[in-house]
Image 1: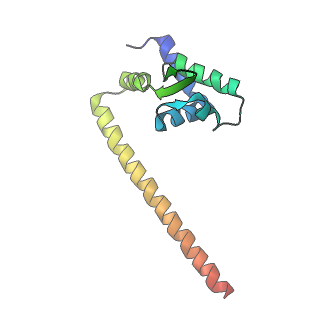
Image 2 (image 1 turned 90 degrees about the vertical axis):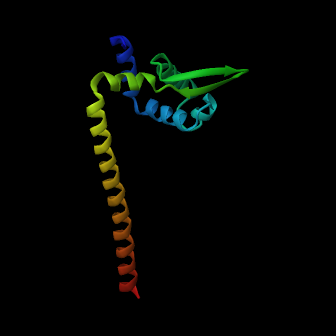
Length: 129
């Protein structure tokens, strides 16, 4: 079971959009260096290091120092532990199915939006000819 302080640290770490962005980078590029992450943000390297420290203190990032380079890896365990606290197997199954439907509807809406844009563009071209 996760302690209240550990859970608070995870929520605090995830409450910041910049840290969530950093976590996304590390999730998508396991082993990314601190420098690779820092290049993606318009803040000082010190600010990046502070954000990464909060993520590491919350257990969301694991760093591996090789020589002078720190390689970063995402640790999803704290997030999974929070998820497990409030969901049962039954509710997780149905929540997963509902998310599938939501994502399919969003994809369909995005596709239809592109089709509508193409139709509007074609109509505009026809009007100017």
